[in-house]
Length: 102
Image (cartoon, rainbow, N blue to C red; front, side, top):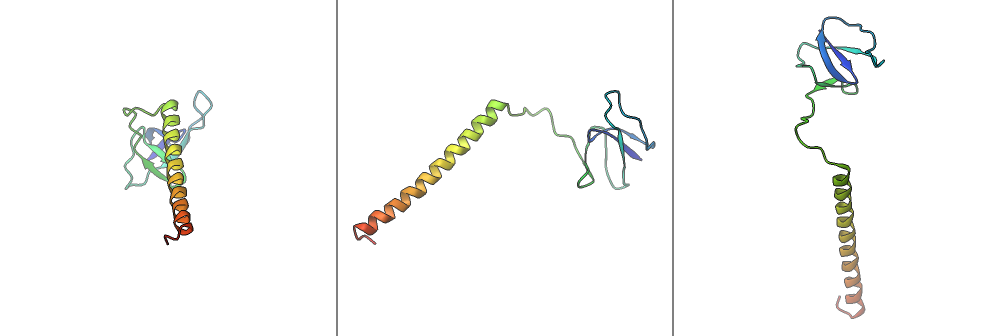
């Protein structure tokens, strides 16, 4: 059996191995399905690992561009606060050394 792929997505399980390009000109690739592999239409094929995986659940909402920007901003602010805290600790140690506390 073969998995008929268009852009790494299984569109059909077939015994046929060769297909012409689809109507948009995308090449249709077939990959042999090994006996132990479970493959269904919609599965995604990874050419690097040569494995099939279930499709990503599209019912979960994806993050919008503004959500991603907000998350990146928050991570950057966290990094700034961590760096500031480290600098404060170094300055406190220097001040203690200057007044003879250490």
